Length: 64
Image 1 (cartoon, rainbow, N blue to C red):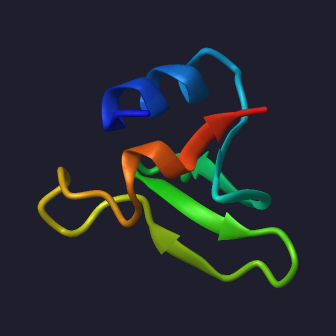
Image 2: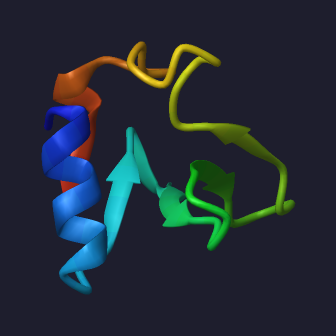
């Protein structure tokens, strides 16, 4: 999934994951997106500080 597809899916109420359902992409309600580990609540930004480069490959994101 591209960055835009991920954002649109989340805004549309769909759940987006990275690699497995253990890592969910969420909207942080401050205008950003995070990849959150459901086991321990640790998180990283969906993108680098440039807002374009994703922390993960497009093919590793999916809707479930």
